[in-house]
Image (cartoon, rainbow, N blue to C red; front, top):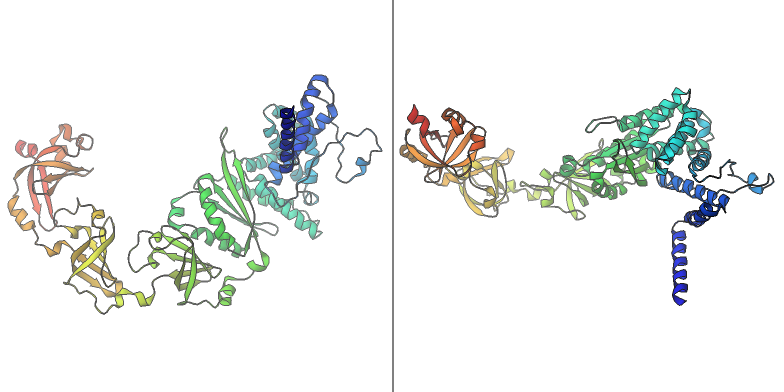
Length: 601
């Protein structure tokens, strides 16, 4: 008995928790309780129908409208059966009179109730300012959205009793309905189109403006359709500035640009849209860029010209039987702060070029660093972060750290402060003991690229060592990574002070072996080599004494047989009989031919 009592109490607590989390579930619980009684005994029909319709309609509006436009206060749908014309509910504000049917399938009843409620709940303040065509198209699109959620069985009911009667002999409504469905499939019908219409309606109501706004809305729809119909990588106009709609869109899709430049280009676009006069800025992030949006938003939050209105997740259904998610973040322009110009803010903090200022690092990418400069947007490029070469900005900076920077330039037009870590007092080229051409110095190799090694001298100077200058014979085969961290001796071969160029050579410290190689490998010398590399134009062959020769493509094709398709048939490590045809002393190259070609000729 105690176990049963405990189970009942636990079940009741569970129900209470559900109701606290979402009061709308009361109708759902009532519906579940009444369903078997209604199905088996036809008792409680009116109560069951009322609960079923109220919950389904309210839940649809909550998930498909109010959650996507959170600034609206959600309304609750209640169904009450009226038995007398004197019932007080008929005279209460917000009451609608409906004719509902007592049937097993409540699909039509749900659609009837929703259709009646939509004009009172969706863009209600705008309806007096638009032609019935727009109102009808909006309601039909939302009913279609509800139908999709009810399931396939609801489609013929929607088409027979709602869609066909509405669009019959109305080609203008048919066309507009199709366009709004396009927006809905793209995921922007409610969170952008209806968001802006609702905002416009509230503004018109507050200003007691009764003028017709249909033309403006059609133009705004045309602009959004351009985004909805946009092909991948297609560039389109992403701003719409009119008397009643001042909207900008920024698209986020994972790209090389994001990885290389980070948030900087997107903050620039935001500033440009604010400057143009956009009151609403929508950032639409595709699924691969969700993480980037999470990184971008805290930085935007530091911009006092904008206020985050919402971040919602929507689905787009452009392709049949397939969907993907998008996140849409809406930022509203803060009029008082947005009207303060960038130049005013610069003057307010008395910032000027050559100032040393403490900045907070907000984002570090491969090529750029985005910073907070006393509330202003700042950027430092990779080349400005050190007097020597960097692979990426994160070599010297980390997100959230604070560091002193030098103001390099204040770009009023782009609302951006350019900063640098290259303080004049740390400039190594001002050292009184700069290395001279012909002098042997020691440097520590700290990085490399495909063309050169880079070493740091004790003065802080950077020395460039071109790859061919690392060895007389083996630079093509040497792994530059093996040099990193090592101290090497180089001969200074060039110094150009005004261009800050210091070039050195490792191999010039040893004797040039190529005159001796030329004497040893006369044309006609036959050797046994090993394939070291196969390329479309030649095969590199390793020769005795750690030397390498080049076997041209023409020689391989001339040999015929398996050599004709040498890229497919030759492999590294394969033995070859080759003959020296020429040694190029200045180019440090040995040209080869296949011995079979030489003997055959």
